[in-house]
Image 1 (cartoon, rainbow, N blue to C red):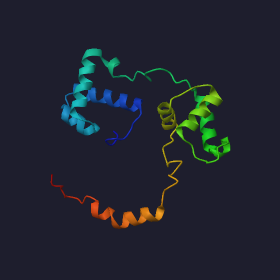
Image 2 (image 1 turned 180 degrees about the vertical axis):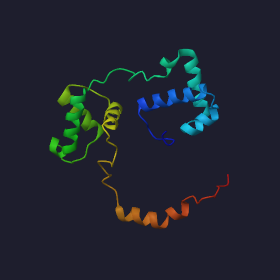
Image 3 (image 1 turned 60 degrees about the horizontal axis):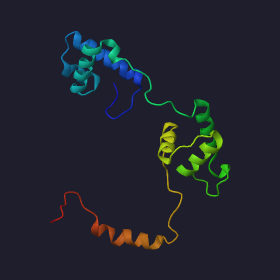
Image 4 (image 1 turned 90 degrees about the horizontal axis):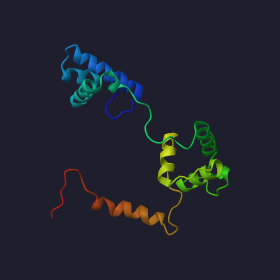
Length: 166
């Protein structure tokens, strides 16, 4: 079973549910099943409740839920190829991708309009993550920032175990 917090695929989770129910039905205590499979005992109890109400069918993975994606698999692959070349290759002066830029690419290439929030979901689904901002303030003074971090920040930074008095 997966370590807590790790993602496992839906078919693996289905196999785990079926195995858990089988173990409980063969007399293994719920707590022991949960420990062996690396899940919470309440989860095993929930699976048993589902099994009693719906049978094995209730434990099976039902497939993806929700509205189908407007971007097909081929389009996603094409988008990955475009993004991999960088924003400069697509004509942007600064070679970093932003959500509005990716939304524009999707609209221009595939005729699909997505909100920035959904573009983020698409990127996440492609294995992309946020790396760094495209801009910094023009007024930014690196020397002053460095000095502030060196002199003022240590004085105001909370130390472990410290409590502020009200």
